[in-house]
Length: 403
Image (cartoon, rainbow, N blue to C red; front, side, top):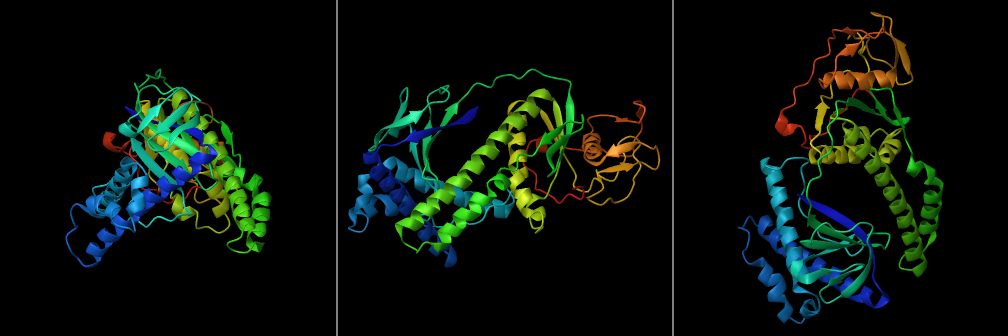
């Protein structure tokens, strides 16, 4: 099984220029090849062959692109192959052959965006606390955990916050996770990040909200700096570091939470939320984006697949907030400010979110309903059938009426 191991790297001052050249050359190869492909597509011509020779081998012999010879040929070839993969993903999306979210056409890369280059086996070697790259040299690396095997490739990344990372692809032996009889339904929210069917409520850290004042202050300072000035570049970097800090904190929280849920439960049920649709709500868009629901689902899906757990995604039309999880009575639509309600059929007093989590678990076919006295009873909730082949794949996100 292949896995990625990502480490922070710290290039020395004299290595920054070779890295900048490498990023620039890879970007030029991508953009030159993309221009050739787009011209053929716009003129409805067959895609030209041997484009890599034109944008790499032959381009090195011209005065305009002679500086391509200053970097390793490996990263130039990888940049071209990445473009081929991007085109393939785009065409497969159009034909419906690609699973998951559809992708658009490849775009031209900018110098200001995130930069990345890839080295294969022949252009890299890993040492105890450094990585050696072709025509760049040894770069100091903070090894938080050892690599389990020899890497097949490494991607060097420079983000908007001016940080450098090395992401290795290695072969790992899957570690069996002990099986458990526990199952859980998960209802995502904003006041609490997640509410579990066992009654546990997960705190929502709201990292963006905590740093919002500092972000606004940094944005105001950036807007006052003249374009092209060093002050503007410094203000832009400061703002990028704030956003990078928020992203790191959120990812750390989501990774720890999803790992805990997957290890403690054999089967999990979640709701098919239309995050891209919900985020259009002007009053809740910032809070929804801050929560990171889409990232949570992606991580949960990947870890369930890795650890052989059963993940059920229930239909968006399942009225999880309107049904009584004890008797299945449909109590009608409820306003968002109604946090508790009493079932008119069995008299059970429900916490809105815990009841929704229980209904998600029931709809996923993971348990029987429990009435107010703790006895099993029948329910009108219908379990959604999920084929084994679609259990772990990324399904399209739908709008949920149960927030």
